[in-house]
Image 1 (cartoon, one colour):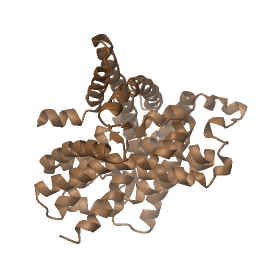
Image 2 (image 1 turned 135 degrees about the horizontal axis):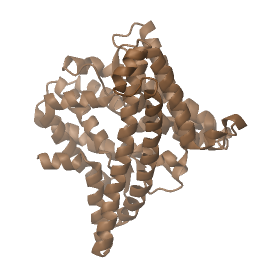
Image 3 (image 1 turned 30 degrees about the vertical axis):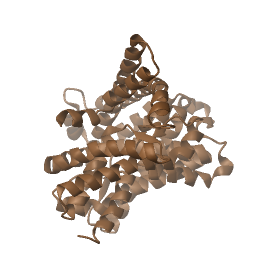
Image 4 (image 1 turned 180 degrees about the vertical axis):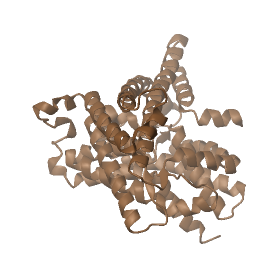
Length: 419
């Protein structure tokens, strides 16, 4: 059981196995099979190193920002909530995860929804959400696993389908899908962008920056400058003592610069890994599609679309994070029972992707509007289900993603009819 759990929650190994099967099916010689499989795993691990680096620096930013501006509440980051859920309902969560992947293959085989979901971390988070909601209504472990696994498998196949019209617009082909459980939000951003369809040609990637801002034409330069500003504003506001505690042996005024450049380096590493593993898995997946699940496509993590509109990523992040901070103000003024604090790494990956989707249909205006709306949803939707999680001992953190919360609210409402 531990072997299967480790396998299905490790997307690098899982994608390597898929590449291996696909290359064997193409009757490649063993050298080509091993080369393609290993490059897939290595590329995804490079991608993971970049993502981890970025997430770590953004978590440091969260601490500086929250302490500097005296924001208190529940941080909308799923990692801590998942750890708590696994400690209390580990068997249900693990079995739901495994059954969910199996049911994803079944739905992809028998329905027109030909998406096979490979972002194992997100599947694990969703399995936690489903397990918590079903168990909160008093159902047995068996029912929780069967129902949760079926819902997870269905959503893994169905929700990427919402984004596929926009994926074709973004990538120019139909070979890959998005596998990241904010897909309702990304599709919504694409539709919001259509409201600015007459400005579609004014893409974020065609913005004519003034001469003194010409460095923004280089994606990494623009990213570095923005992160430098954000880190120094937060560090100066937080003060020397708080910043030095995070910085360790590094001087507190040097620490923000190192963090900003480390984040940018992580982005460079991430995009290198994306290009490497995406080329291999796409080629290997042809045989999987042809022989086992006709016309299927891999649903992959969101950074796979970052190279198509990198400026939209920056713009989407800033708009989504701004929307989340606005949400904090609104929740405080209206005296919400809980205030959801936006996590910078969630706003970056989800808001940045929403920016790409909005940009694909409405240019930079679509990117701004779409990512801002997604930022608001990331802020307000978790507040609905948080009391349920808190009653089950999962407090201090929550699951921010839009799909978790939309599906979770519908499931909670449905199960309340029987409990």
